[in-house]
Length: 147
Image (cartoon, rainbow, N blue to C red; front, side, top):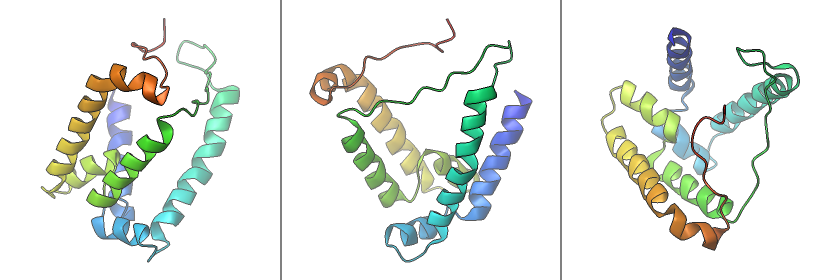
């Protein structure tokens, strides 16, 4: 648990220092005024992709079981969900991780973004069964999947 806390604080620090939690930096990305965020995202993908490949190929759980990384299927909700996510990100300058970083920086306007993210998640969950057939969404499963 302490390792998770340390890694979370380190990740939040990197988001803050890199500008990934700064409203102006995000707005410049969406307005195509600056390459900064695109460069950060490319570095993130460049570092993560080989790590995920290695983890999927050689990774083991704490109990020694092999780790299986399954690709998520694209379905009818992928495009509208991505559009809603992008609109919210462009409007607030924050996606879920940077909301918490921005709050940690003492910027109280992030409370509105956090409220919106939580409300949107709740509304999606409360209406999932109603929209599932319309968007051809997969069935929900509960639990960790560990058995």
